Image (cartoon, rainbow, N blue to C red; front, side, top):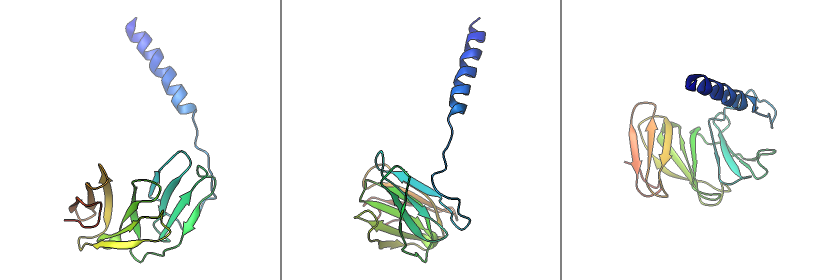
Length: 148
């Protein structure tokens, strides 16, 4: 009896979960790769375009996106935002970019020699890790200003 009740509950929850759908909010682009997106509030979010080297920002829950065309020579790979203004990007060739004003401007803060960065995670404002495609793991204790 319990087994049947659990089966019914599982099937019901599965149907509810599968009923939710994604909605396309922008036209499909063939040149873009959007590997990393992060929301900083209910309507504000950021993402990166790896192919074109752009940072994109929405303030209307994704209905429209503003482009910041930095044309980074080292293509962006991973984005982390602490809040609406402060963020960091890990890019190809071990380069890291930071902003303190919501990507109106960016600065290069670190250049490693260990290959393309593929992941990054922060546990607070200062402590974080980044991993490269060549198997290197970097750590920062100053919010990404330096990495070891």
